[in-house]
Image (cartoon, rainbow, N blue to C red; front, side, top):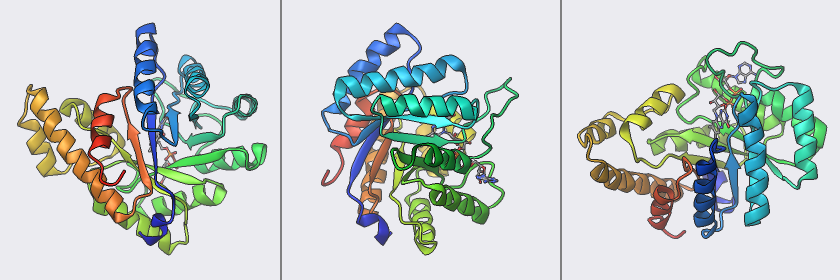
Length: 283
Ligand code: FAD
């Protein structure tokens, strides 16, 4: 974990583009509340559908313009062509965007065309070829391994491929086992991969939703945690109180291990993330 300790500590917050007017108003309140803790950047997810893609751009531009804090659009291979990525990159460059989160993406049900880039490393290489060093590029990392990975070693090889293609830093899928993170970082160190690897944090607020997401993205909820969360049933207040304690404990352990910051999956809500942030040691 030593290589991580030298990177400056940073906090960042992720949103999804709101679809309704009400959602837009709520996101403005959320990002205004989160701006007070001066994050390094906000990021906005990207979907394969056309309206989600334009939503990402609109949301990112509004955030950067109105908060003065860097906003990073996510970009994915799925649903993209070389031509539309080229056009987006040049628009983002002209609009003063400096960071991008580059991903493969997941195929929405019913969609058949994957896109022209097969894997995130190809997208990273394309962004570098088109725009040189203009963008700070983040990629995804999986301390518990990607659900479609062939095996652990190959998944690490492919992660290394994204770094070699030009990624500046990585954000992990969320996880609840800090050992998985420190092992992952140690493996990266052994391979000479010296970029910040920032843990992705999912505040625990709703067990059913968390279980559904976790099954889909391959994040493991340890048995002890599942059992404890299940026992709260409809008692959401107790679940949130307990979830907050667990998340703060996880974050403090990660920072103690040397994590160079934390990236919060906010689900467009400020309350749970700010409550975790308030419990961090030495923030
Ligand atoms: P890749 O790095 O391409 O890896 C995908 C799989 O392919 C892995 O199993 C890997 O082992 C394998 N692989 C990688 N490279 C190669 C190669 N060259 N040859 C053969 N196999 C290879 N999804 C969205 O749709 N929109 C978002 O905005 C979004 N934001 C995210 C943000 C974060 C921080 C994270 C962690 C995930 C996000 N996702 C998002 C989900 C992500 O798109 C999925 O997890 C997706 O399945 C993998 O994306 P990736 O960039 O890690 O893919």
